[in-house]
Image (cartoon, rainbow, N blue to C red; front, side, top):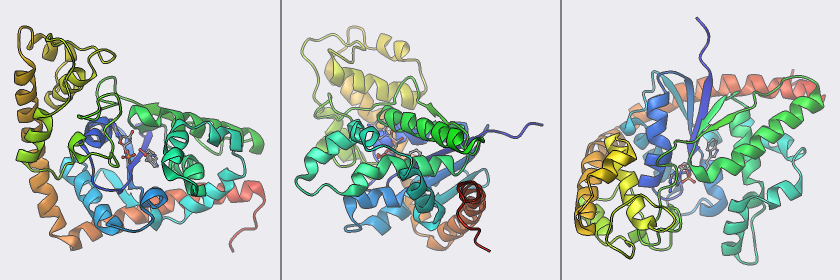
Length: 334
Ligand code: AMP
Ligand code: TRP
């Protein structure tokens, strides 16, 4: 039997997990865990860039872990861990920083967008963010990285860095990873401003569905979603971003082809589309929400899952890091 390939992905515990994270990332992880050797991290160091350790970082990290499990990640199949528990991530990130050009980081769309919001003091961590992400991925020799559309450019940089170091060192130190971006659901849009992606840090909470929202809140947000001019219901993200977003949510949650969902709304009103979408989302999240609460109430079991995951992650990451250290001529630890 051949060894399965490796997958790695992560979500930041900044604020709470959104429906966008669930549909664009988490739901795919659950499908992929059967066929691959999986590592799923709560990427808390990435969160520090914007959350700066304030607010609810610790609580959000537990919540993220509980959400992974509640969504269907099986800790007997996948390794679950917290990024900051594995020191190798920061060590490899430093090394990779020495092989990353400022121009490459300055071109990252996410950096350009987010740095505008930071004002005069742009944290260096925001600039170097994709390098830490590359370290997360390369340490585990991941072949595939399931993410939403917004991470495509970061993945491209990760590939460039893997190839650059492999070439520099004259040996295949790193597997060159590929993104796994689902054809439908990889960019769930804000309900209020459907031309921008649904994001944990949106200015208006009304545009974002958090997995922790109760049924009434979810229904209210969807019923107030911005729809488009005209009356017909069709999938046309450029001209009908609001309507298309709701169709996509249903298609992914019901596991149906988009065309089939669209065909159900010939001759139907926007109101009907909204109330059906609200019902589908509420039903899908109800089960997950119940499980999250049960899991959060048993911190001892969550801690045990993390301890097991950390030990596994630590062993794999250290192996890669030691090879890199040796190759670059850093003195061995012992
Ligand atoms: P983040 O919230 O930035 O930690 O994102 C975690 C994962 O969710 C990444 O794979 C993102 O690409 C994905 N993601 C975030 N927002 C969305 C969205 N609106 N639609 C689809 N995927 C998303
Ligand atoms: N940058 C990703 C995001 O904002 C989160 C992330 C950090 C990640 N490290 C990763 C995703 C490694 C996949 C693999 O969405």
